[in-house]
Amino acid sequence: MVNFLAMGSILGLSAGFAPGPLLALVISETLQHDIKAGVKVALAPMITDLPIIMLTLFILVKLSGFHRVLGIISCMGGLFVLYLGWQSIVTKGVELNLQGTRPRSLAKGIIVNTLNPHPYLFWFGVGGPTVTKAMNLGMLAPLAFMGSFYVLLVGSKILIAVLVGKSRSFLVGNGYIYTMRLLGFALCALAIILFRDGFRLLEFI
Image 1 (cartoon, rainbow, N blue to C red):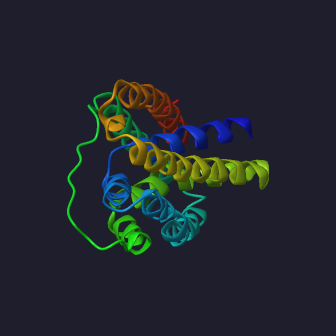
Image 2: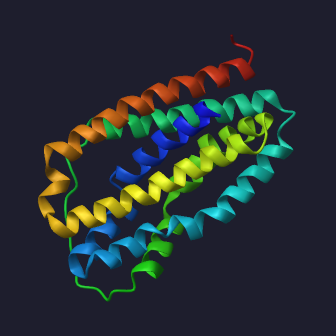
Protein backbone atom coordinates (compact mmCIF):
# COMPACT_ATOMS: atom_id res chain seq x y z
CA MET A 1 0.00 0.00 0.00
CA VAL A 2 2.92 2.33 0.73
CA ASN A 3 4.04 1.99 -2.91
CA PHE A 4 0.64 3.08 -4.20
CA LEU A 5 0.56 5.94 -1.71
CA ALA A 6 3.97 7.11 -2.97
CA MET A 7 2.93 6.77 -6.62
CA GLY A 8 -0.24 8.76 -6.04
CA SER A 9 1.72 11.45 -4.20
CA ILE A 10 4.34 11.85 -6.93
CA LEU A 11 1.78 11.84 -9.74
CA GLY A 12 -0.50 14.25 -7.86
CA LEU A 13 2.28 16.73 -7.14
CA SER A 14 3.56 16.54 -10.71
CA ALA A 15 0.10 17.07 -12.20
CA GLY A 16 -0.63 19.87 -9.74
CA PHE A 17 2.51 21.88 -10.45
CA ALA A 18 2.82 21.09 -14.17
CA PRO A 19 2.01 23.89 -16.67
CA GLY A 20 -1.23 23.26 -18.50
CA PRO A 21 -4.70 24.68 -19.22
CA LEU A 22 -6.03 24.21 -15.68
CA LEU A 23 -2.94 25.67 -13.99
CA ALA A 24 -3.05 28.63 -16.40
CA LEU A 25 -6.67 29.23 -15.39
CA VAL A 26 -5.81 28.93 -11.67
CA ILE A 27 -3.15 31.61 -12.16
CA SER A 28 -5.23 33.95 -14.32
CA GLU A 29 -8.28 33.78 -12.02
CA THR A 30 -6.07 34.44 -8.99
CA LEU A 31 -4.37 37.44 -10.57
CA GLN A 32 -7.52 38.90 -12.12
CA HIS A 33 -9.78 38.40 -9.11
CA ASP A 34 -8.41 36.89 -5.88
CA ILE A 35 -6.99 33.75 -4.28
CA LYS A 36 -10.50 32.40 -3.64
CA ALA A 37 -11.22 32.41 -7.40
CA GLY A 38 -8.02 30.44 -8.05
CA VAL A 39 -8.95 27.91 -5.37
CA LYS A 40 -12.34 27.33 -7.02
CA VAL A 41 -10.59 26.46 -10.30
CA ALA A 42 -8.24 24.10 -8.45
CA LEU A 43 -11.24 22.13 -7.16
CA ALA A 44 -12.55 21.37 -10.68
CA PRO A 45 -10.89 17.90 -11.01
CA MET A 46 -12.88 16.69 -7.99
CA ILE A 47 -16.01 17.21 -10.11
CA THR A 48 -14.90 16.36 -13.64
CA ASP A 49 -12.73 13.29 -13.07
CA LEU A 50 -15.25 10.92 -11.43
CA PRO A 51 -17.04 9.94 -14.68
CA ILE A 52 -13.64 9.44 -16.38
CA ILE A 53 -12.46 7.17 -13.54
CA MET A 54 -15.67 5.10 -13.54
CA LEU A 55 -15.61 4.62 -17.33
CA THR A 56 -11.91 3.74 -17.34
CA LEU A 57 -12.24 1.17 -14.54
CA PHE A 58 -15.27 -0.39 -16.25
CA ILE A 59 -13.30 -0.82 -19.51
CA LEU A 60 -10.20 -2.19 -17.74
CA VAL A 61 -12.22 -4.69 -15.70
CA LYS A 62 -13.72 -5.99 -18.95
CA LEU A 63 -10.19 -6.33 -20.35
CA SER A 64 -8.76 -7.99 -17.22
CA GLY A 65 -8.30 -11.33 -18.98
CA PHE A 66 -6.52 -9.82 -22.00
CA HIS A 67 -2.98 -9.53 -20.64
CA ARG A 68 -1.42 -8.41 -23.91
CA VAL A 69 -3.92 -5.57 -24.29
CA LEU A 70 -3.25 -4.49 -20.70
CA GLY A 71 0.47 -4.71 -21.41
CA ILE A 72 0.11 -2.36 -24.37
CA ILE A 73 -1.96 0.05 -22.25
CA SER A 74 0.69 -0.02 -19.51
CA CYS A 75 3.44 0.75 -22.03
CA MET A 76 1.34 3.61 -23.47
CA GLY A 77 0.92 4.91 -19.92
CA GLY A 78 4.70 4.68 -19.48
CA LEU A 79 5.22 6.77 -22.61
CA PHE A 80 2.73 9.37 -21.37
CA VAL A 81 4.39 9.61 -17.95
CA LEU A 82 7.83 9.77 -19.58
CA TYR A 83 6.58 12.67 -21.73
CA LEU A 84 5.24 14.46 -18.65
CA GLY A 85 8.55 13.88 -16.89
CA TRP A 86 10.52 15.35 -19.78
CA GLN A 87 8.20 18.37 -19.93
CA SER A 88 8.78 18.94 -16.20
CA ILE A 89 12.56 18.64 -16.53
CA VAL A 90 12.83 21.20 -19.34
CA THR A 91 10.27 23.67 -17.96
CA LYS A 92 11.40 27.28 -17.66
CA GLY A 93 8.46 28.55 -15.65
CA VAL A 94 4.92 29.61 -16.48
CA GLU A 95 4.11 32.54 -18.74
CA LEU A 96 1.26 34.76 -17.60
CA ASN A 97 -1.26 35.73 -20.27
CA LEU A 98 -4.14 37.57 -18.69
CA GLN A 99 -7.45 38.54 -20.27
CA GLY A 100 -10.25 40.43 -18.63
CA THR A 101 -13.07 37.99 -17.81
CA ARG A 102 -15.87 37.57 -15.34
CA PRO A 103 -15.05 35.65 -12.13
CA ARG A 104 -17.05 32.45 -12.86
CA SER A 105 -14.06 30.46 -11.71
CA LEU A 106 -15.48 27.02 -10.84
CA ALA A 107 -17.53 26.83 -14.05
CA LYS A 108 -14.48 27.80 -16.09
CA GLY A 109 -12.38 25.20 -14.31
CA ILE A 110 -14.92 22.45 -15.01
CA ILE A 111 -15.09 23.36 -18.70
CA VAL A 112 -11.30 23.58 -19.09
CA ASN A 113 -10.64 20.28 -17.31
CA THR A 114 -13.41 18.48 -19.22
CA LEU A 115 -11.91 19.59 -22.55
CA ASN A 116 -8.33 18.90 -21.44
CA PRO A 117 -7.09 15.55 -22.88
CA HIS A 118 -4.62 14.93 -20.03
CA PRO A 119 -7.14 13.51 -17.49
CA TYR A 120 -8.43 11.02 -20.09
CA LEU A 121 -4.90 9.95 -21.08
CA PHE A 122 -3.80 9.74 -17.46
CA TRP A 123 -6.67 7.63 -16.20
CA PHE A 124 -6.74 5.27 -19.17
CA GLY A 125 -2.98 4.80 -19.44
CA VAL A 126 -1.75 5.27 -15.85
CA GLY A 127 -4.36 5.82 -13.15
CA GLY A 128 -6.84 3.14 -14.20
CA PRO A 129 -4.28 0.32 -14.55
CA THR A 130 -2.69 1.31 -11.23
CA VAL A 131 -6.05 1.24 -9.43
CA THR A 132 -6.99 -2.17 -10.88
CA LYS A 133 -3.59 -3.52 -9.83
CA ALA A 134 -4.03 -2.03 -6.34
CA MET A 135 -7.43 -3.73 -5.99
CA ASN A 136 -5.62 -7.07 -5.75
CA LEU A 137 -4.38 -5.93 -2.33
CA GLY A 138 -7.84 -4.94 -1.07
CA MET A 139 -9.66 -1.61 -0.97
CA LEU A 140 -7.13 0.37 1.09
CA ALA A 141 -4.45 0.35 -1.63
CA PRO A 142 -6.59 1.92 -4.40
CA LEU A 143 -8.03 4.40 -1.91
CA ALA A 144 -4.49 5.31 -0.84
CA PHE A 145 -3.48 5.89 -4.47
CA MET A 146 -6.53 7.96 -5.44
CA GLY A 147 -6.65 9.82 -2.13
CA SER A 148 -2.99 10.86 -2.21
CA PHE A 149 -3.26 11.74 -5.90
CA TYR A 150 -6.21 14.10 -5.53
CA VAL A 151 -5.16 15.61 -2.20
CA LEU A 152 -1.81 16.61 -3.70
CA LEU A 153 -3.19 17.47 -7.16
CA VAL A 154 -5.77 19.88 -5.77
CA GLY A 155 -3.62 20.90 -2.80
CA SER A 156 -0.66 21.90 -4.97
CA LYS A 157 -2.88 23.99 -7.25
CA ILE A 158 -4.38 25.70 -4.20
CA LEU A 159 -0.84 26.35 -2.94
CA ILE A 160 0.06 27.91 -6.29
CA ALA A 161 -3.03 30.13 -6.10
CA VAL A 162 -1.95 31.33 -2.65
CA LEU A 163 1.69 31.89 -3.69
CA VAL A 164 0.75 33.65 -6.93
CA GLY A 165 -1.72 35.81 -5.03
CA LYS A 166 1.16 36.98 -2.84
CA SER A 167 3.97 37.06 -5.44
CA ARG A 168 3.77 36.89 -9.24
CA SER A 169 7.47 36.06 -9.49
CA PHE A 170 6.98 32.60 -7.93
CA LEU A 171 6.19 30.90 -11.26
CA VAL A 172 9.42 32.00 -12.93
CA GLY A 173 11.63 31.64 -9.86
CA ASN A 174 14.24 28.96 -9.22
CA GLY A 175 12.14 27.32 -6.50
CA TYR A 176 9.35 26.43 -8.92
CA ILE A 177 11.71 25.38 -11.72
CA TYR A 178 13.85 23.12 -9.48
CA THR A 179 10.72 21.56 -7.96
CA MET A 180 9.43 20.73 -11.44
CA ARG A 181 12.76 19.21 -12.45
CA LEU A 182 12.85 17.02 -9.35
CA LEU A 183 9.30 15.86 -10.00
CA GLY A 184 10.23 15.26 -13.64
CA PHE A 185 12.97 12.79 -12.67
CA ALA A 186 10.52 11.07 -10.29
CA LEU A 187 8.03 10.73 -13.16
CA CYS A 188 10.70 9.19 -15.39
CA ALA A 189 11.33 6.61 -12.65
CA LEU A 190 7.60 5.83 -12.52
CA ALA A 191 7.57 5.47 -16.31
CA ILE A 192 10.21 2.75 -16.02
CA ILE A 193 7.96 0.88 -13.56
CA LEU A 194 5.03 1.11 -16.00
CA PHE A 195 7.23 -0.17 -18.84
CA ARG A 196 8.34 -3.08 -16.64
CA ASP A 197 4.73 -4.00 -15.82
CA GLY A 198 3.77 -3.72 -19.48
CA PHE A 199 6.65 -5.92 -20.64
CA ARG A 200 5.71 -8.54 -18.05
CA LEU A 201 2.12 -8.60 -19.30
CA LEU A 202 3.41 -8.89 -22.84
CA GLU A 203 5.72 -11.71 -21.65
CA PHE A 204 8.84 -9.93 -22.88
CA ILE A 205 10.45 -10.39 -19.46
